[in-house]
Image (cartoon, one colour):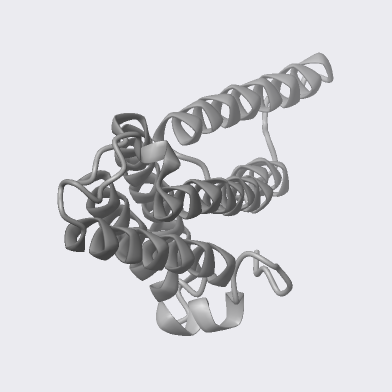
Length: 189
């Protein structure tokens, strides 16, 4: 199932990056979701902590998201992460260069911190859009994938039972190859 037009990813370029192996690309996109979610835990903790070192923690996490999303041609995500990384880097440098006397006691009053905090929701929105995109192309995380596989197995079993009963009612126990192919084809979708 090729995705030709999306705001979240340059699909043709991403496919090229993956040697035109769509299954591999989908696996990498799922891995990216996991990595982004891991980095969000770190960003949220840094924002909650709101200390001078928080700039560096946010910078590192944004850098990871930027690099991974860049490799998979996810430009909106990459751009939002790059902006946050830059703001956090500037904030870290400014905070580091200030003496203890110059530093604002309350980091929420610090102009660099305000800039970082304004960009966090921008990256979060890009992340939500990325997650929605993955759902739209049926790329799920491990739990969703397992639930989907289980559901598909139940549906397949139910269809086979139905076909068997239908044929059995007509004193025919055979299930045609076409019917089996149809059921198998539905699972592959």
